[in-house]
Length: 84
Picture 1: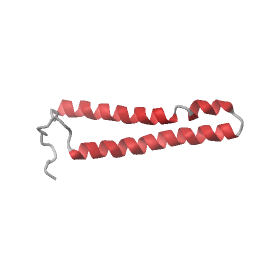
Picture 2: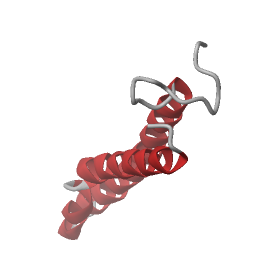
Picture 3: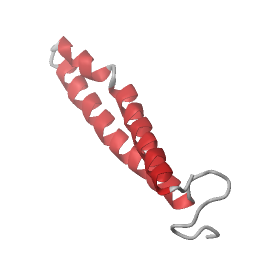
Picture 4: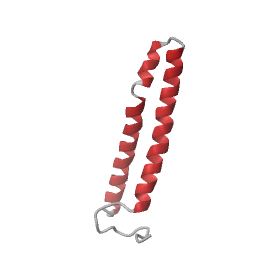
């Protein structure tokens, strides 16, 4: 598009490719981790192991924390490269 790889964006934002990769990575990893926690926890709950709720209840927040961590890592990398 209009932004070439490695160029500085004058608006203080990351490039489109950075944002796209961040969204895809956070979505896939968050869905895998959160979905696995949800599946294992619900499997335990259906087998009358109530400790499974420890996995079910934080499944969505953990998936969100993964995305937040990936976003913070992207910002640090972009600052280190001088692109924002």
